[in-house]
Structures are given as structure tokens and as C-alpha cells.
Image (cartoon, rainbow over the protein chains, first blue to last red):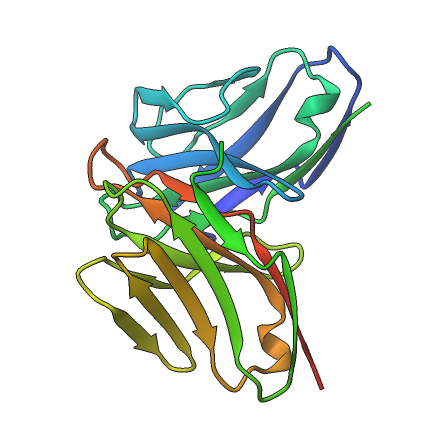
Length: 113
Length: 114
């Protein structure tokens, strides 16, 4: 059982480049989300989705786009990378509902130079 | 802005000791308070969670204490072990708004020394 799979594990971008961080889950979870983790800031919610075709903004959505065409996949797109987007990005999924735990992937470490 | 304040930022405890991490929240609309544990190179994983109608929840060596009037909750790790060395995040969630969006604290790096 793979759980939540994130690719790539590491990425270096130049300012202005675009890229897509991939996230896939095999647990048939309705809810998926993206967080970024920065030192001293904890985990901050970027975007989330409560099901295929439905997405919404979290706390820090600027500079990021998402779409949810299937239950399994929830890619995060950086349209024009900036140094402020240097971070570790985590994708998470759950069955939805308040008490259901978030299942996190192992993260993508992104550096923007 | 951070809506849940977590302290301390880092903590060193001797093996067998008690580790205590504290969190304070502001908005009483939140009614779900989990703790997540993260090892280096891995994503966070749910450790234990509590709702405000319960003052304490214990799972093995891990206990959450909840003080609704003070809007504070804490994680106690009894008989701390080197394998408990990790980063711990408290979080808060609300039953309104759909899904299970969580707001996380800033994290506490725990080191348990032999």
C-alpha cells in the first residue's frame, strides 16, 4: 500500500521557471491538500480539495495553482517560481470529515535560486 | 498569521523523563485538536487527538491535557525514549467549512538524550 506519493523528492529551479509538483494517493480519499513547511513557521495550508473537480484556497495560495481531475491526483503548479517559494512541500489526504487523520507524503524539497 | 501558538521551540529531555509541549488557541470555534509527529525526511503522522468535551486523553505513553477555559492544550510524553526524538506539531480544526483543514503550530523539536 503506497499511501501518498510525492514526486520529485528534490528540485532546484531558477527564478521565473515553472514546474508541477505531483501528488498521488491510492486510498480513495476524497480530501487532499498541499502544505508548505518553513523553519519557524510550521505547516501552512496552500490549497485543498474536497473531491474531484472541487478546489479551494488555503492560508498561503498566492503563486500556486491546483486542479483535481481525478480522485487520485492533486498536482501543485508553480507558474513563475520565486525565491520565497523555497520550502518543503507536503501533500496530504484523508477520508474527509473532522476526525479523520491526514496522511502525508514524504515531501518535495524545492529550492528557487 | 499563526492562530495556534506552540512552545517551546526546542526541548531536550533525558531518557525516562517527561516531555511537555504546550499550545494555545484563540478561536473557540475550533473543536478538534490533534498532535502530529514528524521524523527527519518524512511527512508528519497523527499521534493523538482530542475534542474540547474531554479534559484528558491517554494513548500509551502519550497524553493530551485540555484546558477549555484557558484555551490551552498540551502533550505529555511519559518515560521519554530516544526514539521519541522528532518534531511535534499541535494543530486545530473546525467542524465547519468542510473537509478537515488544519492550522498547525510552529513545531517543537524534541531530543531525548541517553
